[in-house]
Image (cartoon, rainbow, N blue to C red; front, side):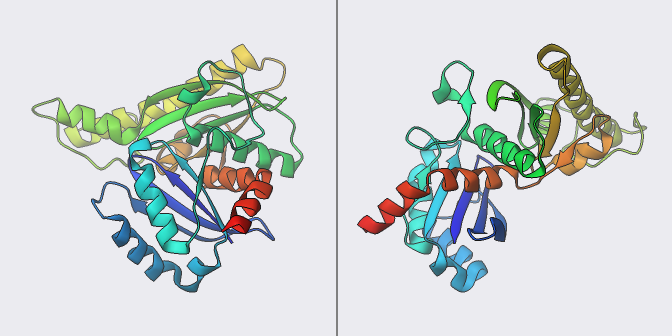
Length: 270
């Protein structure tokens, strides 16, 4: 079994894939801000995974929180006895990055793009692809038909926008965002909810339209949406999209498959 971990400053998203059918057999999300020690995470995950933890033979991680990487290594080694590999220099992704400063690109963006391309190839599609990852920060990426990642936009996510409004205003409350029933609210709570959620949907629609017009005028891109907050905005989008909630994890598994020889060599050396 292959363990993947998509880690950011809000969540640890663990999946275990069966390499025979390339499908996840276990998935869970845990807060990465809980204050738990690595040993506490190991205890919690073991209680959830049972014997599955001992069947893991390799682990691959996307982390956008470098200061947590040492703890992430301890969690995974304590859980299943393997040393994880992190997406970055030294791992093939099959993705040609047509951007400046590759080292500054979040590995979650790469994993989403890899996962989207794998999905499209499995379905027999050959068009460009736009990936939208809706979480604490939302990222919108474009990959051309040749499989080259050609650009990224990063904007404040829904929860970050709520925190900004309530945190920097003396009178606006903290709210739990939900899909609004109207374009405008009739009280402060609903007005904030409409503003935050709908503006996000409008922004995503606008980016998709503009990307297609500027980058892919001959053939519109296939659009894949992922992320913990995707359920809030997808029903509000005018753009045609496909939702794959665990897209980065699927990308991580594809990256494992591209590098399976090096994972197997590392395991043989133990």
